[in-house]
Amino acid sequence: MKSVLSQKPKVVFIQPPVFDFALYDLFLKPYGLIRLSSWFREAGYETAYINALDWEDPATTKVLGRPKRKKNGTGKFFKQQYLLPEQQVPLPEEVREVPRRFSRYGILKEVLAEQIRKARPDIVCITSGMTYWYQGVVETAELVREHAPGAHILIGGIYASLMPEHAMRVTGADLVVKGDNPDPIKTYLADKGFPVPSGLIPLYPRAADMTGSDSGFWGQGAGVIRLNTGCPLHCDYCASDLINPEFRKGDPGEAFTVVHELYRRKGISHFGFYDDALLVNKEQVLLPFLEMVIRSGMQISFYTPNAVHIRYIDDESALLMKRAGFQEIRMGFESASDEFHALHDHKFSTDQFHNSIRMLYRAGFSQKDLPVYILAGLPGQRADEVENSIRIAAEAGVSVSIAEYSPVPGTPMWEDAVETSDFPLAEEPLYHNNLFFPTEWRGQTRDDLQRLKLLARETRL
Image (cartoon, rainbow, N blue to C red; front, top):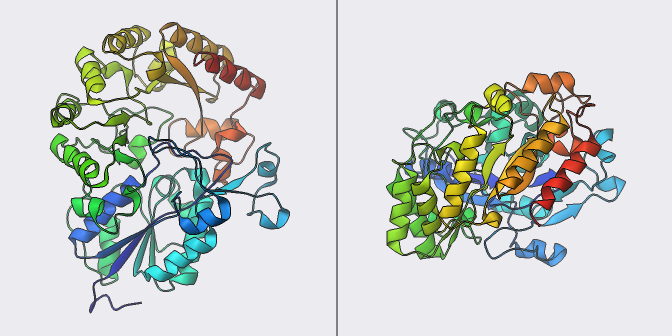
């Protein structure tokens, strides 16, 4: 390892591969890593990027073929199914019994290893997604230890924030970072003799990270943007306020600069919003941003993979979203039961939902543009409540999708999930995967869930 006192230290940011039964790229980008890289660059670090989910990697393409992709930058990743016993990663017996193949998504392991070896990092920052994707983080950390011995390993992201002790134990990382708080990173860097970046991690990446030769994650067909960080709501089933306890209002001008640079210099015209609360404070942030986009004349398409809050939709926001190029408005409907919302999230009333849908139709959106999520599989939730929600939502003229509940450590609903599940959720994150239906009970069985998913699918035909 280079002397951190005599040379410019190098940080390598890694998006790890994913192990799961299914994975689809719905604007899946490591936005946190991109912001973090700007923070390190401002402090004088050399930065580089390794994207193990790179669906264009030529070496992997030669072996696995090119994944099917869509024009809007979404699509499939490289996929290796575990068909033979000797190929299996260590899995609990219940995982082997799931009637779908457990797979590794991303570039070949040997390609990832070679990229790590060539990078010669002083520090490696590995991001993490779902808790049940932790095996990709473990694999990446092991490869760093093997091919970049002496490099300091820092792990952050969703899994690291929700299960830091588990992450530290299974990865052997030097530091596990919870949420967006930079103080532990600063303390660690200072203790090891590295330069210490100042201030908070920026909400937006710098232009150099978007357009330089090492722009890494930005160059693949689609971009992502986040106006605000965190969410002021505190829903029982959601971890947003655990990962970002403070809601930070964004800057519409800076957000517009990010989009404009990617559009002008990289030709990216499809963007997914990463906001958990896109419409909160919309008069100060979202609406001015949309007006800038409209005035610029850029031909852009926007998408909302995280869904928006129905209660904040009004005629002005609906019209501006349509004019600015929104191709869809995904919404978190969750349930048609006012009792559900009073108990779990205080999001909206059913009357507000119908009013919002009428406003979106007036703005020019149609049924196919308005998918709504309905939650199913929550601890103690009954199938008839979900069925009633599907029917009420469909009558309003939207497309319905079932969002299957995944237990999330640290949320108010977590303890109920642990108590009611037949799986050891607290010990093994793989069981958080909704494919196991970990909170099944007699009031909502696997057969019920399959029937509800078919009913919801009918609304999209």
